[in-house]
Image (tube, rainbow, N blue to C red):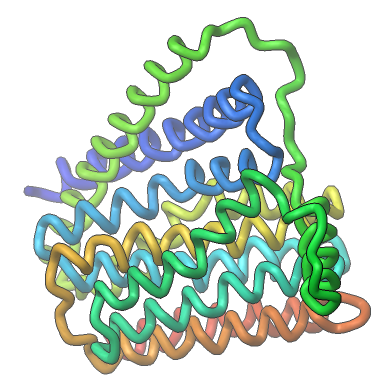
Length: 333
């Protein structure tokens, strides 16, 4: 494929994918309200929709045999999300603050998932074992969002934990709600959701195909295409949502959105496909990228746990580390 064809195909496919993901998120939000889902669960569905371009691009690349591109998209987008959603928001708003209970809940979910997927990518853990472990973590979390914590617990220590979890879930409500009453029937919305998913898949297919063609012609490595091209571009919906929540000083919603997004990326883009498709051995650069993601996640949690939350200095460090990450990718290429 010549650049004259690949470049317009890439740009058009990117536009279709991002537009479809944005509409997809709105429709899922409306469906959640229509069916009476708890607001925390609606927020999780919105994060899933925003992750559509990243997950679809990674799965398309995996299906085409470009494993380095697939892993690069997911690892790169997660590093980008932490910097763009939380770090940039703190820089613009002055700080990102949230209750300790919310941070504890998000950390107890996000950190184990990140470590589990890292073990799979490094070949230290079998994909099926990782899927079982993640189900044990995410299953109760999903039930918690749907049904809420139990109203009473006989064990005093567990009762205190349940109370903290209840407070955390209460703070996790999404910031955006529809501004007007919607009259579309659920059946109509479900049909449109299917169309949105098809558009995201088609756009991702065209985007990955064009990126691979341009990369091979210009001698850009697959890993670089995934980490520095597809990852940040497909993460634009998440970045926009993060900055909007940050400027509205909705720290709980912002951090929940960011960590849920990263968790969904790793679960849907790595762990589940790895059960059915073999994972190639991680290269030296990929191992560095995985270690960078773990370190960035730990740093982000540490900065958010400070009494005053993540201030501009800490945010500048987090964003600066992303640019160091980019520089390392360029040097390694």
